[in-house]
Image (cartoon, rainbow over all chains, first blue to last red; front, side, top):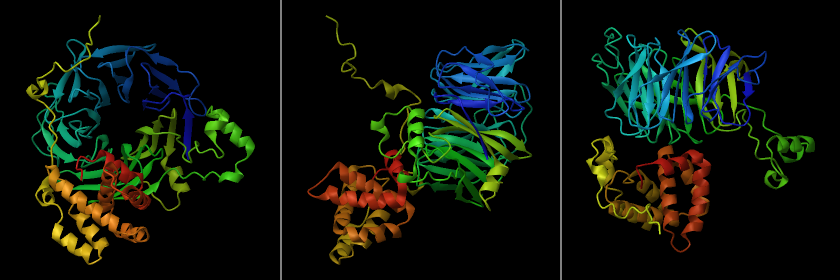
Length: 374
Length: 153
């Protein structure tokens, strides 16, 4: 059902797969990006390459599948594009022109540009200047009023959804006239100069994660008031759902009508969009509940204590520190692992517990009975 | 001797106001008009006197002045909410919380936490009972929304 790998004890800040998913780039809450190669099961114990250039914590990584380039951004306010020259990854500095930490980076679908969100209340849209072999950036500023915490590209390579800590989800145009043709009109609007605000939706808390649906006509976001919301192009009606659990951090469309989201509750949740309503379907992590109190064997108790380096004082009579979910701590990223057409066949989650888990949609469906993930 | 350079008392000017992209928190949205007034005091008192405390609390929660600017309207509504909550017995809480819509449970939770902020004689124990019931129904999510909400009660 799920392919589980642990990188040790450090939280996984972010991860990105290459095109054939034979390698994964991860940042383990530090300044370096480590690239791990696939093993028969999971990932090899030590990284095959380490990308060292950033001076502060790496906040986001994205790996362009077609052009095989990695872009990283960090709290040191820099971004690097890494090109593979056959032996090593060569970094090229990106001129982001920001005075606060970069928070999030994503390649556009056509990979000719990428967008970087930052704490400087702006989005840098970067493209390569062929004459100088140098990444330039243009800024989207207005009306962002706070840190841009997440972003996602529309499949048309022009529109960009952003989530921000000013409690707003916005859709902007990130059209760079120097490098691309005039875009076709979309349901979000027809006039698309760079920085044009196409839509703006209010939210009840910081927006942690945002995602365009596969056709690009809907946008979903999750925010810190424990809610998930979906809005459609051309309408200002927002379908919002307040959860009874802890807030979600990232969301991802599995198919045109199904969204998976995960966060502080350590398990991915499945949501369904019907017309203009959003409903909760099920949790995708249904582990067997650990047997209560008396049935926990002494052997297992001490093994768990050893694993988590607890002493008998903190562990208490029953081990409450082992969660019933696979992830043992907050899930901080949810990404696509592999696609089948416009549907996601495998998705990956990583989080504070240092685990990277790849979930197979088919296997999940088999284990959940009648629930369909597509 | 070294001077305390961390002191900021010499800063008399609010330099942020000259920043052209100063973050101004917006209060209220489309429904700003309707949610300014707060609950009708006379109506709530009439319900309370007619020993319909449950109804009275629902009226207060439905008309919570979450978009009101000044604190006087909110204070008045809070006083009414406290009066209603204290008038309802522990045994009756469950049924009432069950019958509330999810948004109203969130509002109730906001009033419970506000009640903890300014306790009166014997109120906290009663509010803890309320908290238990509201938590059982609204979960951690409703507490999270108390902490994150800009639209306070």
